[in-house]
Image (cartoon, rainbow, N blue to C red; front, side):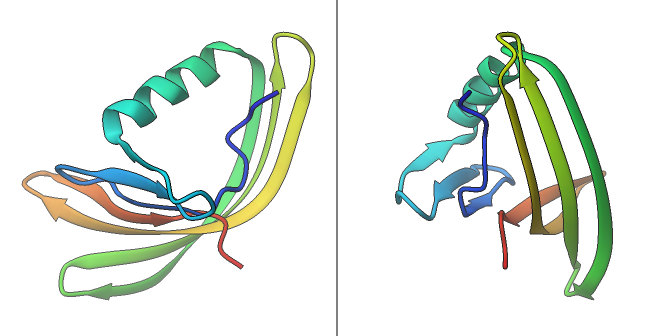
Length: 108
């Protein structure tokens, strides 16, 4: 099963955002990410996640949060994928919405 997995993802998900896979160097637009995730989610029979977040900083209107999570998914074909990982988010308020401006996936 081709689950998202721990890729070392870096992105800017605000207006004009992108993702950059740090292992492959491949950049993707938010639309490409949305299409990929939609396809992945449709292939799943079951998913479980638990997470815990910690506020790391608030500086110049930007909030940095560290998230630890445990993820387990089962495809419609019965294959399973599990991971435990840590990632960080930087979020900023634009108008009346908080948007992710950076996500670092699979941090040490």
